[in-house]
Length: 259
Length: 244
Image 1 (spheres, rainbow over the protein chains, first blue to last red):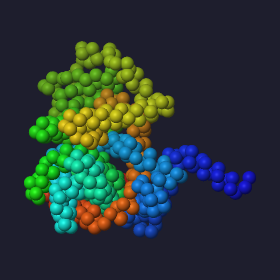
Image 2: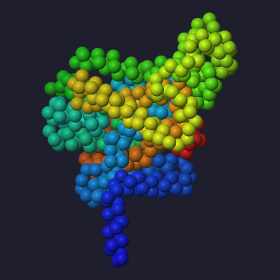
Image 3: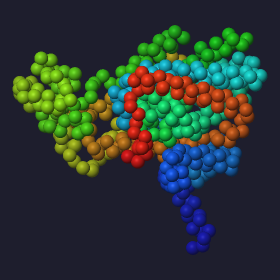
Image 4: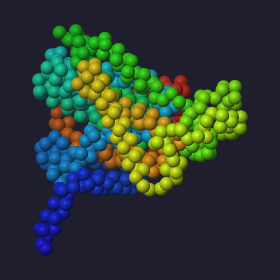
């Protein structure tokens, strides 16, 4: 058997079992990240934070190679990552973390979560609209769409489509949301101490205000695994709430202000 | 619009508030009542294990629940003639029959029951989320995952109260909870980082400023709730939960 045959054999096995390959691959990434976290940073940076960063770096590599939109999973060998990191598995495992929720803790912060949810929808929107305005955007539809993108990358396109924004503006609002999700993923552990992010109630406030489920859940996972269910519980209402307010109240407010 | 707002106020908000109406079990750490007859008292409800039924007891008969509530349970037990309530006869749905035997059995197909429960909660939650979205005219799932989480919390609480949350079944749920971080790594690896990097100053600056603004407000709120003692004591910092 020649070397080429062996390579072909490995390639075939990997491509035939995408999800299993993804499990093995992510396992390797986590292993290396834990090792780096322990020995390179002396345990100061959690292994999971490094793993998320490594994931983003790999997504950049994948996107640079293929020029497509789904990071590393656009390479045939890693297509299983799309399934493993897709909305289905993400939400399924988030629901599973609810088994670790302490009911009494969560009940205590229900109203706080709601206030955080409202603020977390309005504040990013205002920030997004102001920045777009500062860059010379005057069209209320474009302003609203970019502002909605600053809520989450799902609220942006849905709001844009509902009020009839152009595709460039919608792409811009998706980009805003994706950048936000990535910033939240990366900087949550960095600012965790500053935000007093060390108890369930604080995690619920964080979940409501920081929005974007992937950002919140990954950021909390990198900070302290036990906070994940509390933050996600509130954050999952974020997208729906944003989609409700975006094309209605927020659009009307922008229209009244800028036209 | 007003109907939409009303739905939000009447459906979403209460679900955030009322996660579960039942108080903590008496000896939660030990899997809730391994004694054969009486397993706990919750707000005047005496939970009798073995035939998976609840029994309301007279408040006058119930001793004050203190730190030694396990003792109190036995005191109550001594004052009640279990037979007079018909509790010695098993009279419950097929699923709860032989729950004791199943709890002690190792291996077998119990793991899938946990995963299936999780899956059912997920599906029902998403359906409710979609229904809610359709009802208020929104093109996205409204809190489906959050509702699924609430359902799972309620279901596990129900099973725990009846003492039929078998360790094997627990594995079927906790495995997926533990798979959470690896899945997040996969989520990160499938992000469109290129578009995020290339999208120019508007996207970057508005994203950064909205995150900074939110982080600032989070810091303020969390300091306030810390000082007002709404928040609980901080988790132990030395153990970040990465290695259980």
